[in-house]
Amino acid sequence: MFSENSLPPSTPKALTAKDFQTDQEVRWCPGCGDYAILASVQRALAKEGIPPHRLVFVAGIGCSSRFPYYMNTFGLHGIHGRAAAIATGLKMSRPELQVWIATGDGDSLSIGGNHFIHLMRRNVDIKVLLFNNRIYGLTKGQYSPTSELGKKTKSTPFGSIDKPFNPASVAIGAEAGFIARTIDVDAKISAEVYAAASRHKGTAFVEILQNCNIFNDGAWETISGKEHRSDQTILLEDGKPMIFGENRDKGIRLDGITPRVVTIGQGGVSVDDLWVHDAHDSDPTRGFLLSRLDHPVFPVPVGVLRAVEAPSYETRAVEQMAGVRARKTPDLQALLNGRDSWRVT
Image (cartoon, rainbow, N blue to C red; front, side):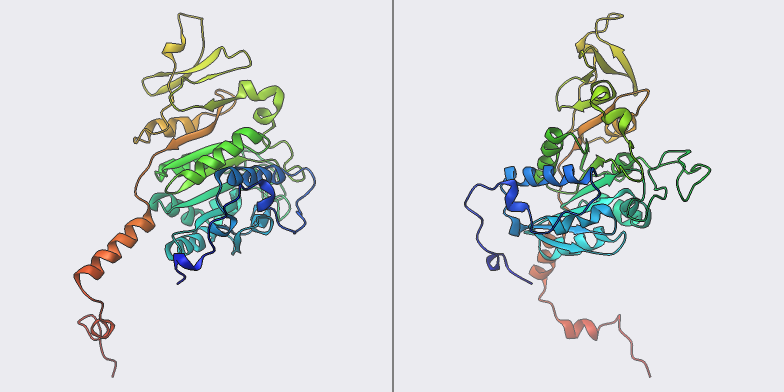
């Protein structure tokens, strides 16, 4: 295992997005939302001032999984659905590194679904970027675990009969400490979300509503288009009431545990009646309610849905191992010859 001292010293100069760019030609389809995501991540990491040599990007298989090639950091390209397992092993052995996963809705929620759930519940200090374009893009347009009901694709020519996953709901069901959502082309909010994920200690999950202009063009057009965005999305701000709309005259009110869209100034409704966002609420109940708000009845929440600090998995593991060593010096031979071993004759 390398030691902390084996790493180069931290970069003293101010970083820019160019410090995270490689000499590789970025090869996604022209117009793909991945370009915007890449640029926003590079800007966010530069602003956070994390030297490239202290970052690792891990990927599985899919269009999103080309990400490590385009980041001037350490990178690993694994097999389909196994990025979480690889990243966990890496973080456990090199806890001083900041580890990121770039994955897609198929890679992480289909073949990698079990790994995804357990990464969330364990709270390993890993940052997960899930590119959700509601389709299998790399394999040319089959339906994915997030494709909407009735979706006609090459693998569902008469329409999908599968109920889709809500990635944020899955993550909060596993009680992930940090959950956020953003839109690929919303550069300002995206960079802020990625920076917040970087600062969070523990598993940080970011769902990115991303367009695939070749096999699922307009995947999120009803909420991501500039003409719709102010009415069909709501930016969550910690400690502030939930207000949205082009004229900032609509809001979300909680009646018990039932969210409702209201118009400020009508029916006696004032700003004081609105649901105030608390990203640090340790009870996941309201966070789950937020994850379920969806178009067309509700605006889709973007920004940080949940940010709750808790001891990370690798921190607890290191503390546990240190405690065991402090009580007793390891004796491998005694372990091999102990009561739990047997002789084959």
